[in-house]
Amino acid sequence: MRLLGRMRLMAAAITVNDTTLRDGEQTAGVSFRLDEKLAIAAALDAAGVPEMEVGIPAMGEEECEGIRAVAALGLATRQIAWCRMTAEDIAAAQRCDVTMVNLSIPVSDLQLAAKLGRDRAWALGHIDTMVRAARDAGFEVAVGGEDSSRADPDFLLAVVEACERAGARRFRFADTMGVMEPFGIYDLFRRLRAATAIELEIHAHDDLGLATANSLAAIKGGATHVSTTVNGLGERAGNAPLEEVVVALDHLHGIDTGVDKLALASVSDLVARASGRPVAANKSIVGDGVFTHESGIHVSGLLRDRRTYEAIDPRELGRRHRVVLGKHSGLTSILHACRQMGVEVPVPQAQRVLTSVRAHAAATKRAPTNEELLRFLGEATISISAN
Image 1 (cartoon, rainbow, N blue to C red):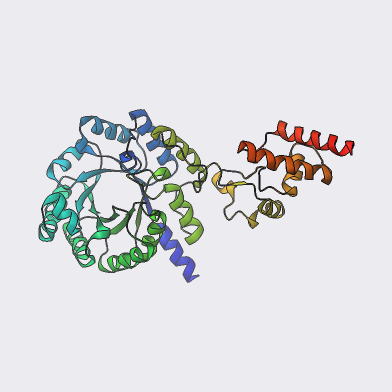
Image 2: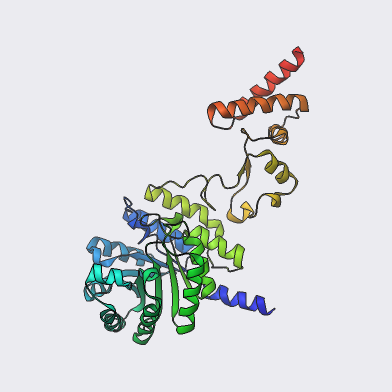
């Protein structure tokens, strides 16, 4: 009972902050039209995503118009504007009908020096000044620590303490270059959690293919918020995918984020079309082929009990499993496919059909159609009759 109580507490504390409309649109070559931006915002809201970053006010009036248009939809989700930590960006956000801003500032020595020509002392003072200015302007404030993963951990603690003193409600740990790994992330978030009472958010990039793992590790270490994008869109290798984080938190940790898993496939398809970035067939959770089976051993097990080779019930995601025929099919697959067409096939014919299916797969790189399967069956029957 104590464990269940802790899990329920964690579930209530984990908030998804989707940044498809901001960081997702920063994918090289991606640009959403206003109607696409509105459709994505509405779909995320309908799916139960509680927070979303809706744009960058400093980009200009057209961007501000888009942010205001999203606000005018009257969505339940909290809308956040992304800003550099400058007075000009805060002023631009005031024209956008949002109640919260993410103020981004480099926190690694490398980026402070190379980008801004500044040092740690300046950063701490600037955080204090600009967070208070944004609060005076009426905003709730999250501070985005750009390049947190390459910052000195002791300085990162000082940054978080400065955020809390100035009145920020949240600190975003940004693994901007995607260079962290789960063990290090877990240890860092445990230190941060022990040092502060404010919200902590993980914003993970996927340069090493670890964005989802790092997000889960941060949550285990004490993060209260997790940043995602639909289909893992984002700069370079992208961000932690919404669909992976939501399903992994549920299945691995019993944490319900409130995001409707049945909506993930349709949201994924919407964003794929709007971004012009197709989803790979083997993309986890939303890929077309992730519940598709060919291997004879797998199919034989699935037909007895789906749990043998499906750790996630596809129905949980509004999906269904498929059995396809190919080079690795077995006799059970052939018999099953024929029964699906209403045809009972004797084993000798089925064995010949299997040979034809394997040859077809090698030659065409695809599964046979029902018509081709029936033709193979006819040829097998004629061959056996002739003998």
